Each structure stands twice: as C-alpha cells, then as structure tokens.
Length: 258
Image 1: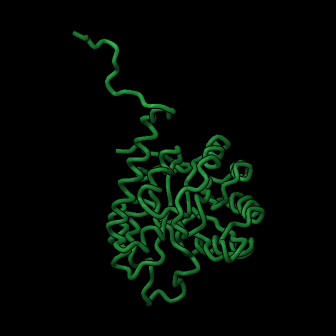
Image 2 (image 1 turned 120 degrees about the vertical axis):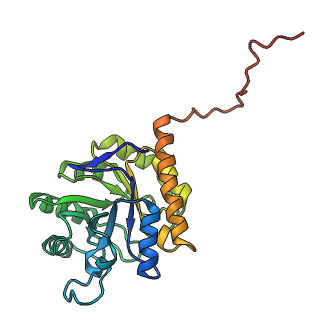
Image 3 (image 1 turned 30 degrees about the vertical axis):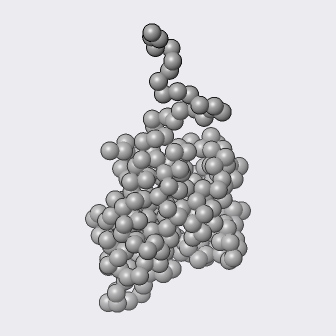
C-alpha cells in the first residue's frame, strides 16, 4: 500500500485524481472511478446543472461519502469568471477546495499564468484551498506556492493530447522549487506515462481524457491505478544509475577457474 499524503490538512491514500468529463455515459464513468481507486474526483462547475435539482445531474452519479469532490473552473478565460465559478462551487456545497484554471489560449488551452496567480491570491484570502493548473515553469510554481496555493498542478503536455511527459527536466525543477505537493495534470495518455510521472517524484497525477476516451475506460482506469502505485514505489525504492556500458549481473570477481 502507498503511504498516505496530504494536501494542506486533507489526507489521502490514492495518488490518482480522476476527472468526470467525456465519458460515454454515467454508468461507465462510475465504473471507471471505482476501478481507478481514486479518492478525489474533479467536477467542472460550469458543466453541472445547479439550477434544477429535479433534473439528472452529474453529481447524482458520484458517491459523496466515498469521493472528495474537487470543483474546477474549466472553461474560464479570465480572472473574473474563474473567481465567480469557484465561489459558486462553494456556495452550492461542492467544496472549498478548487482546481483553479484560468485559460489563456483556446487552441492550446495553456494557462494564463498571470491571471492564475492573481486569482490564486484572491481565493486564498477568501479561505479556499487552491490547487492551480499551471504550466511547467518552476518560477511560476514558486510564486503560486508563495501566494498560498495548496499544491501546484503543472501540465506534462497539452490538455487531452495524450503526449505523455514531455518536460521531465522542468518537472524536476518544480519539485526542487516548492515545498508543497506537485500533481502532474494534463497530457497523460497511457499507464506508462503515469508511471513515469510518479517515478519523477511527483505526489500525484490527475487525468481525465486518458481514461474517459480509451477504448475501454474501465480497464484503462485499472491500468492507471496500478501504474501510479508502481511508479511511486519505484521512486521510493530508488532506481539504479544509468551507465554507458554493460555491468554484469554476476561479477567475475570470486569465480574460481580450474
């Protein structure tokens, strides 16, 4: 079993965070969440029906006793919209945790880091536990940490691209720059990507598309669960150093030649 870890004062065992978008239907989503073993589930506030509680809602299919809901501000392209969405999520009882997104470009979905930093400062003052989705810049990660962010969530590659970990060096720089949890968010396409991320020493991995858009989301969710565990174990175990030449598993020293 993995050692428990914390985001501020919230303790968790699973290091896999899973989104709720893009599934073919709610039943597949529920089964995938179960197979993933996750404890934190992200929900886009702007895509949830909060007005008419008599109509079917995404929230009807998430066991609130089992999962911690992490509202996110997906689809927000300016600070004002992100703040409004975060506050709405808290007002309707979702959570005072928020995955904060302020998107700067509709094509790449790269974050507007200046707006992100501004929104982080405001929401921290309002008592939110802020989990900002950011780029792979260690300088910005440090500024977000100094602003009171509960963690930083750097992208591994563009959202939904499935390109895997393109920026191992920068992720390493971020791990050195901050003393709060680092959660890789965006770009994970398959189990090996998740394992690589965890082997770098990050605290967790958040994914949605990699599971929801797989040919078999439930089986992929199970694969991601195992990959995150294996990657964390490998990080804690410590890999052998890379060498330019071969090194025999059975050294010649001590062998008796007759």
